[in-house]
Length: 226
Ligand code: B12
Ligand code: SF4
Ligand code: SF4
Image (cartoon, rainbow, N blue to C red):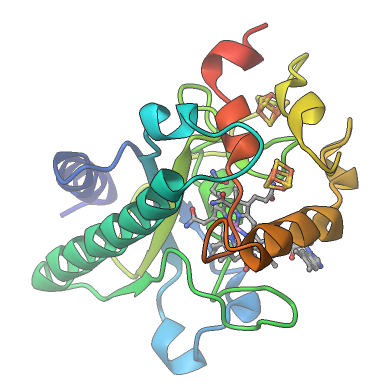
């Protein structure tokens, strides 16, 4: 089957199983930076990026800290993404190509706080959205209210293109971050300031992991249309 036909078949499969966002990208030039063994990543030069939306209902409960409902939801969405990646990987393997599902949310290097690869970076290359002022991937329909997973493959697929859109005039997340980690320019995002607050939420046992959700709630389509 050709690249275009494979793309259509794989996309349909993913949307049928619950993906809200789908895109593909050539990642051959990024592979050296992945925390995946050279052997496992050999020949896997294509990434399939999938996004699953976060419930607006769950987010609506968040005011100035994450909630138990959000913590549970965060874990359910991660599990859902990992299962979606598993289904897709098996589907690709059964079609005669190789596939490697990358965990939705696992930390490989705790000191540097990095994972096997950056789902955001790949999602951007695959046309799912742009990196916003809040340092998250922003989609024109869902804002930042979605989570991501990646499957690497050698299946011949047509590639999507990164979007040229950006946050424009929107500042909804800038005014709402409790530690003012979000700045005018996305390059100035205060990673450490953000991380300190997430550690504090965990220390106070508000939630059991480093999560927040405040800037995710703020970033929806409605706000950045303003
Ligand atoms: C580790 C991690 C974190 C860490 C640190 C993040 C980091 N490294 O920047 C902490 C705990 C702080 C965190 C916070 C959050 N995260 Co997080 N996180 C991850 C994870 C597991 C790995 C990120 C990674 O390896 N990046 C690789 C690096 C090289 O790429 P980068 O992130 O673009 O690189 C920057 C950082 O490394 C930063 N940096 C440099 N030095 C340091 C030092 C420290 C201490 C920190 C914190 C950052 C930092 O500078 C780099 C250039 O900008 C990803 C899942 C994944 N596999 O992608 C989710 C992920 C990025 N997180 C996500 C989310 C939603 C969140 C939170 C909203 C928490 C929540 N669920 O409520 C906050 C948002 C904070 C923010 N506004 O950016 C989503 C983003 C979805 C989207 N739409 O964009 C992801 C993709 C998970 C998923 N499967 O969907 N996260
Ligand atoms: S995750 Fe929380 S602390 Fe970090 S930038 Fe978003 S609102 Fe601010
Ligand atoms: S809330 Fe607005 S400014 Fe912030 S990341 Fe989303 S679109 Fe960009």
